[in-house]
Length: 395
Ligand SMILES: Cc1cc2nc3c(=O)[nH]c(=O)nc-3n(C[C@H](O)[C@H](O)[C@H](O)COP(=O)(O)OP(=O)(O)OC[C@H]3O[C@@H](n4cnc5c(N)ncnc54)[C@H](O)[C@@H]3O)c2cc1C
Image (cartoon, rainbow, N blue to C red; front, side):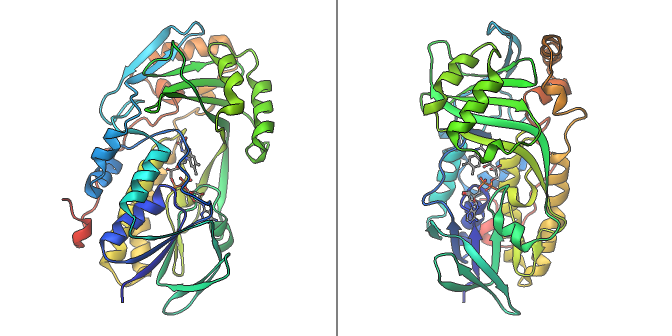
């Protein structure tokens, strides 16, 4: 009988794991609480070993074909003139070679794993661990047995919180609102970043759909704004960003019709990533947040390693342990923010903003990288392990 896995969450990590295990001949079920694939989200990048993972999956060309068209990054003054510029330069630097809208990447991975059984509009109710299997009761009411269960429900995973001890979400005191707004005549193919006063940042990025992706980021104690209704979040943003300058008014005016996505940044820490037959994957295990970067690449790398370990060993416990031993050091390395971040990237005064733009002029400056909320490196020294399964070999 084929090995049976239930994956909870059809974001990036879940479908990536499904791709590998379908290829390896496993019986794969993916349950997603949303009624459909969540094809929203803004620009994400795939770097380092994450890029190697998509090459091995055979989807790199599809990702390149859906490139967001961003050619580089600029830190601008209030008048829109560039103060510092970074051209797209391979895997390092603010704009990577593989830039794709999150929803389009989810779509590519979902299509690539079409042989999995996707159950939308449902979720895990309970998991009962037995010697030979785990019995899952779904919210829809039915029960099924699986050999292993992977929880890939993202940063705020509720199943993780029910099944795992010691879960911590460490707030970074930064909220980010992502909005999709009409493209204007002066918009460019650059990621433009404006550091305003009072701990605020305003970003505009091009996409491949003819719209513009706006990001409003600001420092705040966790106030639960992420749990408000969109209309209330828009009111918070209008209040917080009043008078910020540059293109802010235009973004605020367009928010009502912008498919707003709002998050309060928090890094996830879980003492152990598996319990019994259940294992954590992606942001549910180690969310690093966009301030650290590499979250999508980590999800892709983790899915590859977990699939490799599971297909190499019939003992799921040993496989889970090796997966964690291999991935945790990388996740912790990525999560460690440069000294002073995020505070240094969200200055209170105009002088602070001017100093940051000056810092950004020095292309290699850690301050510049922190300012752009991007990873300082693709961690290119991390290499994907090789596994005996044909499905996980380099093609
Ligand atoms: C809608 C959305 C938009 C995003 N936009 C951005 C962005 O613009 N920029 C950025 O850097 N990162 C964004 N992210 C986060 C980014 O996708 C992740 O940091 C990274 O790719 C790791 O992905 P993941 O699969 O672990 O988690 P996610 O991509 O968060 O996927 C988790 C999936 O699990 C589902 N889920 C949650 N709870 C349950 C449950 N109880 N049962 C079943 N399914 C459940 C969610 O609906 C989601 O589909 C976004 C995430 C989401 C869900």
